[in-house]
Image 1 (cartoon, rainbow, N blue to C red):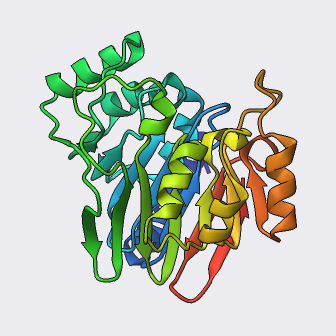
Image 2 (image 1 turned 180 degrees about the vertical axis):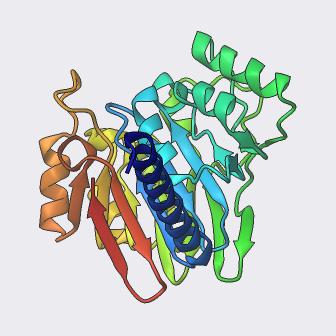
Length: 287
């Protein structure tokens, strides 16, 4: 057999293997009816992807370009669409990577508080959103966004519109939301501090959740014990950068979680944390 024919055969065999592999990935993705919540390792930043059983993609913050590779792995190449993006608050470590995301993905709508903030990154992000004519939603108390049967996100905080307002402590403007999907609940807190936790605790709101995204990267300014008890999660996720200058997470926060028997994961130690559910159990994978 000629060498040229051998090369052709090898090429076509390799091509068939690639096609078969891609077809399997496509079939698995299309047939999946699971919930996936990925706490993406983005260094000292928040970046959370929710993939619903109904094929919607929801992005809650994206504070660093470091997480783009892991995001791309989790959103298939045939569906470069993000149905909802939530900007919890406009600090750079929650929005910096969103500029790159907006340039690569089609975003249907964005929820943000609309507070005033002078960050150049925030200004650039808002200009990009405006240039793409992406609809903006201002959250309101108890607002519910449905994604399908038994799957929705509920706004817990803020209680009132903050649009156009200057907020002294921007962390305490964070959108706090709860995902309720396939019989499991996830509470996302942004960088909300103890003052907001107290306000939420004092209200007659059921915030009990199976998974809690720990506020403000595990800082001592968040995660008051009373709040943790009210949420009563099985699992806590701390989104934090390795050897960060803030010494996050605070040892007291870690000790509180241990004392309450809450299993904790950290993106600096565990990498990207994928939590999946079929409605009957939660499965955790560290990457």
